[in-house]
Every structure is written in C-alpha cells, then in structure tokens.
Image 1 (cartoon, rainbow, N blue to C red):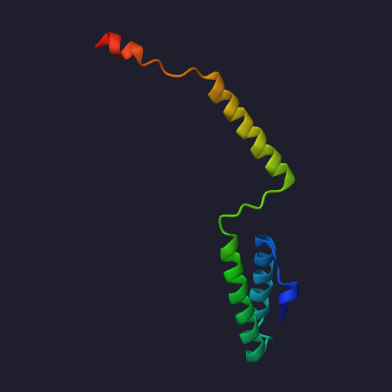
Image 2: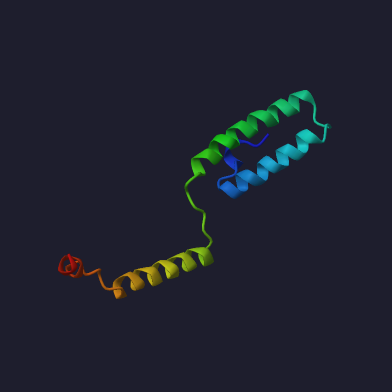
Length: 92
C-alpha cells in the first residue's frame, strides 16, 4: 500500500494508480487482506480525485492556446460595435 508521502498528487497520477489497483484486484492473485488494503487506498485516492474535479490541469501548450483564444475573443468583442437601440425607437 502506498504511504501518504508518495500518494499521487495530480488527477492523472491518481487515475493511473487507480487503474493499477484495479488490475491487481482483478488478477485474483491478491489475497483478501491485500485486496482490502487496495480497497482502502482506492477510497483515499477517490476522495483526493474529487478534490481535483473542477481544477483544470492544463499543459503549457493548452494554457497558451486557451490564452490565445481568450485574447482573440476579447479583441472580437471590442471590435464589434454595440447595438444601436435608437433605430428601434424611430421605427415604432
């Protein structure tokens, strides 16, 4: 069982460790005691994973792309003139 010092920190690491645990339990070579230890570890990892939900893990490239797209959208918003409501009043 992993100790608290080397528990996976990121969502991806947690997911990888949970996959390893699943393979170990499914192998049917693990004893009942070992399976229970793995189950306890999986519960801890699942709770840690829930803390990561909503926290995006973006790579540097993904972050750069996001910022670039955000800047383009902001530039488009500035370039687009506001709607002129006076034309509606004249037509009524």
